[in-house]
Image 1 (cartoon, rainbow, N blue to C red):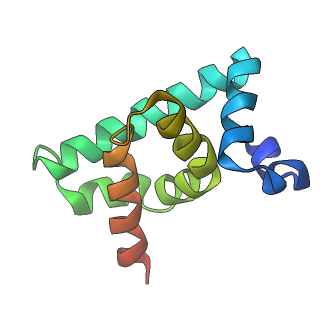
Image 2: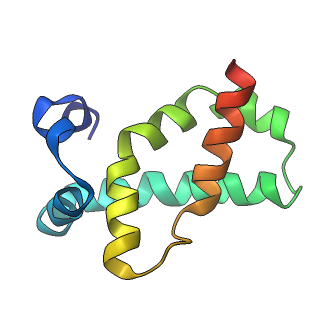
Length: 103
């Protein structure tokens, strides 16, 4: 997945094309779901106060926003295709929070 998101081909994809790529590649889709669900859970726990933000930042402060940015096209494409604007919203929220903390 990292190799793909670093590729020039991926950089040129729009959201719809990225979503189509997810639909065609089951391994890519499985990896996306694995990352997405893990980071969505962390975002939900932090947002609801069940996990301290600074503690989450210690473990995921650099990788979580980086992975969100790498997979953002997939997420936005999937939201549009499924008609679910809230899909992985807590991951996106936490990525933005961590980016503020990194500044």
